[in-house]
Length: 335
Image (cartoon, rainbow, N blue to C red; front, side):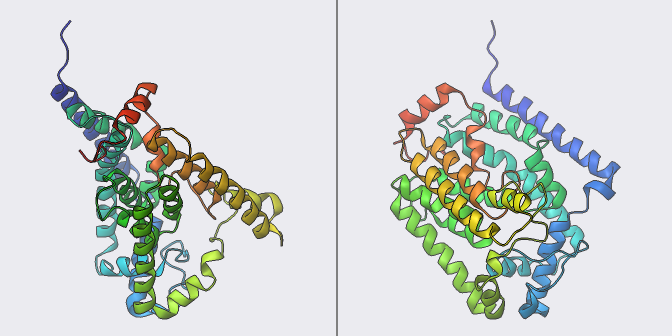
């Protein structure tokens, strides 16, 4: 029996990925009124424009065609401001290309976190996963709304994939949290997995992003950190909000005690998830345990925002054993 070489698998997987991308492009071309609106992209761009023109009103404006509020951090607004001079069409294309391009990268790093050895076979698996993932709900909705989920995912997974000896390990998680708060759940994860230095770097990086916000957008930062951060979004009842907060808001019809119920539930779930990370399971499994309860505890969670749980979606029991053997091997994720 002739064994297929890894290079052949890689070519086939890459062709499958290109076919998936072509299918998405055809879908957009056939129905741009449905698949090429990217209402969240418009919010990012308009938020960046507001930084230049009306910074004090950043969190009071209704942005984009959908008239949505800006819910990201002031630091995120500063980043969006850097590209706000580009047209909306440029933003649409750039973010779609970036999202699709990061899919195989994240898959490759996740496979490394799960113990798969570097090489053509792992690259082939990454492209195959990316081809399928492009059509699954989390990625499809990210492209539909024009969100930056894959960028945040790449920052988190790329950071986790770094060897523990790297001095800058933790910066990616801190930056991701500085843009959107959800990745903060991985700082306790780093602590519970005894990577205290990386957790400290993440926390310091996050603090620096807050400092940048106060230095350059003092009023908007005071509004955001002074209370806006605790307010639900424009549609907290929407079924897309799969967090405990969303469930409680729907069950209580946003009653006066809904916020207190959420705080209690978030603490309980957070403690449960954190305690689970102390087990002897592989680190990619710890990351999933930290990410899952963390997502539930947030104010709003739609699909797979931090997305690190991808690492455990497609691996066998053999992978877990391999991970245990390689847990002390530096750079398993990136190599």
